[in-house]
Length: 324
Image (cartoon, rainbow, N blue to C red; front, side, top):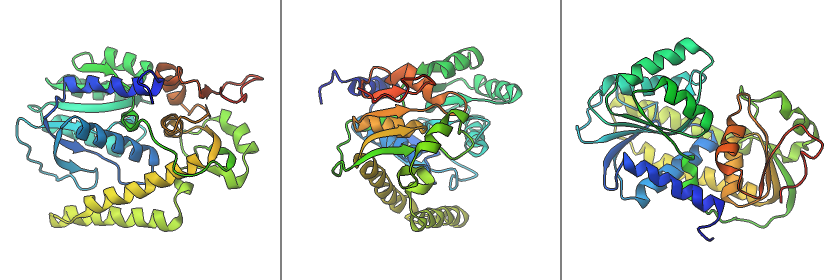
């Protein structure tokens, strides 16, 4: 597809990361996902594609479950933390890992890939800001203007850059099956669900209403749980088991399943940010519904509004018109 397409332009904007992670850099990649959130898997696949496309040498990879308690890293390696929507106080496991990295490696360059920031507690936000501001070489990319404004004010000693989500590196994705169904409702069922989603829950037929935790079969979810056990075992015995190699192949299957699902529908209505981004990558019509703290609308207004096939839902009479 031509480089003038709005999604091609977003992919090109990711090159700003090369200012702090230059081509040919040696890095370690920290906090990649080992759980059943397909959005984070898309981010991981986009991040790995970015590394490969730019000749960035990934010397080690660690999830939150297998990163050693005592980690030794050569001084010229860059620590790159996985992006996403877990910077704040909603998902403490991942936030605690980032804070540990910042504390333990004051002499290394630390780069946090594009994140959405959300703190419920102002005190916690201030504590994180104090820690990050004390680091002399910390670079953070954020995915929306609200996160950017917060970071510019609070993380005023860090390098802050507005940047799209890493999944855009996967543009363009090709449909993997024939379009045979009408509307897919890909709707949140977790702590970020917002009341405005209710009308979509009410109108969705059960056969066409899914989320990440129901897209994958009980057997596939059980497989993810087994991978988590092997990661913990690998850390306990000091490895190296080939767990990550097999996990990455398994995530190829999970991602292909999501692509095939979306490809089989004419339109998507979603309150998942990466439901929105996946629909963009497949260049298909879709409606974006916000989450509990405005992450989806912020992202849409910052980056994807120029996409003629995306429409942001608002509580108005024409809100469910088909995207053009």
